[in-house]
Each structure stands twice: as C-alpha cells, then as structure tokens.
Amino acid sequence: MMQFTDSHCHLDDKAFKEYLPALLTQCAELDIKRIIVPSIAPDNFTQVLSLAKRHHDNPIKIYPCLGIHPWFLKGLDDSHLDQLSKIVVASRNNIIAIGEIGLDGAIAKNAENHGQTPEDNWHHQKHFFDFQLNLAKEQNLPVIVHHRQSHDKIMPFLKRYKLNRAGIIHGFSGSYQQAIGYIDLGFKLGVGSTITYSRAKKTINAIKRLPLECLVLETDAPSMPISREVMGQEVLTVNLDNEQVENGLTVNSPANLAVNSPVNIIKIFEVLATIRPEKPDDIAIQLERNVDQLFFS
Image (cartoon, rainbow, N blue to C red):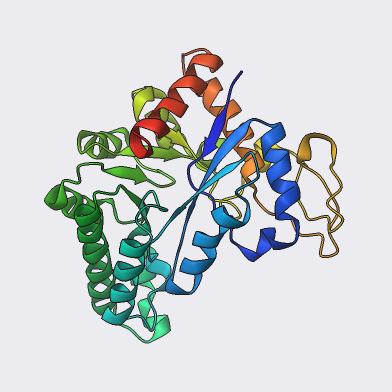
C-alpha cells in the first residue's frame, strides 16, 4: 500500500479552519499519513505548535516547524529573532525543522512600494536568514528554505553553514545545475505544483533527471494551486457540516472559494510518476524513505 507525506503545508491557515477535522479524515482515507507544517511569522508560532496537540488522536501525524518567512519581515527586528530562538529551544522536542525561512528576490525588487530600498530589504532578509541558519546549526535541525529569484544569493549561505542535516529547498523551481548544487550540500528538493504546469519545462526536466533519493512531495497548501491542466474543473472548497464528498475533492462552501489542499499530494504524485522512469510503488516507497531520512533518523 502506498503512503504519502505532505512535506510542506500551512495547515494552520484560516482557509482550513472550519473543516480541518473533515480534511484530516480525507487525508487518512487517501493514505496521506504525515503533514509537515512550517510557521511563517511570530504571530503563528503558537498556532502551528498547537496543531499537533489538538489533533493528536487523529491518524494523521502533524509535525510543526518554526521560522520566519521573508515575506513577513516588515516591522520585525532582532527582538523577534530572540523570540524565535527562545521558543525553538523551549519546543525543541516538538518541532522537526527551522522553517519556513529563505530569501526572495521579487520582494526585494518591489521594496520601494513598501518604503524600503531594494538594498535595505536585501540586508533585512539576509540578516534574518543568517540568524535562522545559525539557529538550525546550533539546534541540529534541518531547514525549510523558500526561494524566488534568489538561488544565487541562497547558495553562499548554505555553503557557509554546511548544516549537518541540511533540509528541503521548498517548491523547487530551477535548473538541473541549480538542483545539483543543493543536492551536493545534502538538501532534498520539494516537488510540488510546479510540475503540473506543462510550461515549467526547465523544472520538469530537472526533476526527471535527478536522483529519486533527493525528492520529497509537497503541496504548500493553501497556496501554489495545481494547474487546471491536471485538476480540470475539480476544486476543493469548504463544507461547514463536514459531509464527506466522493474522492474528497469537491464540496460546497458559502463563499464558494477554491483552495489548494493536502489531498492534492496525490495529484502531484501522479504527475511525478509520469515524469519518472521508476514504477509508482517504488517511487512512493523511496519518497517516504527520503522524509524519514531527513526528519526522523
């Protein structure tokens, strides 16, 4: 029997609030056994940590991570890094990674829209990234790394720290050469919705050629929706009475809003299986081994 792990899902997001128990039941029925939940800012540290405690009786295992995302640095300073450090130390036995952290070139490029120069924004981002990598090294934890227009800036930091447990390059979208650079440092690559877009030829070709031992699956739900090419008209929306719907993909919501969901890890896996030369069962087994090796060995 194939089993799956969503290695990156913002399960604490308000999009899931009203129907989380039903969603977890759907995941269990689809053999999605583990969901890894990174934080994004100080105001959701406690929320992420409490998810696993609130749902400890559910067959789905929820694993929290703590970190500050580069999108949410406005108004943050060293006091927030100190807060992160203290809560990581206090929660060390309950978290499995530092994340979501990283560098984002698009945010820096548009910094003037938010009252910063691009140079100041890069400095701010790099300061937070550096601190969090150092925290991961001190605590012997892997990291979950966000990137966008920033591979060239991320790599020097990762080479400098040479983390023993490395981590995941979240939502990898890049070339084969960039992928190999991360793999050489011990990182695994998060395979998500990017491969469901036929136009993402560079990333698809890279994922096709890379060692299966360096890949993990992720949805980044509720962000990063799967392409219409793959999903067709299927969407996951919210049903407040938590009624189960066939295959867990379509229910009605008062707001009628479609969201990405961890159930879509199955769709991503199915696309990956068309890209890779290995048999689907062998792919599924190796993907789970990769998660085990990174977080649980």
